[in-house]
Image 1: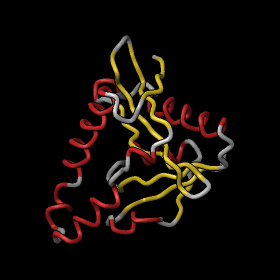
Image 2: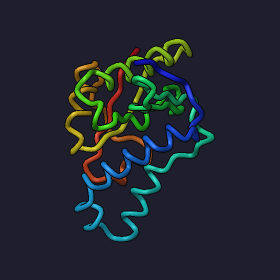
Image 3: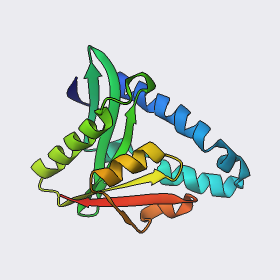
Image 4: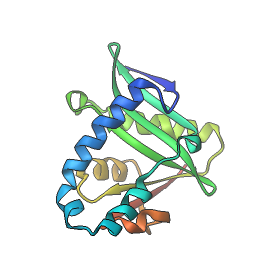
Length: 157
């Protein structure tokens, strides 16, 4: 497995993010259905990404096949981890940990003191990964307050 730095709009990165969106949308479908249109619009705004803000996008390639994705964007003096995803057929092999380690390496090279991230309370594997890597819970920040039961984390590098 190797990592490839790509543009945010790289076709392989787009495909991996689309797969992630399908998976996470299904995971939270009942909550989305229970929200008012205004509440859902606020959640959508909080999760929206301006491609121009992305400073690093990496995909994991396994035997020529793109199987993982992660990205970084600025958040105040830190970088925010975005869109960490491993294809279902590639899970259980430590790729998400390797991707997170790669993001930490990139942040360190840039002199960034810490990483922050947001995840949902139903993404138990992600929560376990982040906590096992030293990410600690913090108050929900930014627009993520619009997301019911959002969880936010920080790791000092």
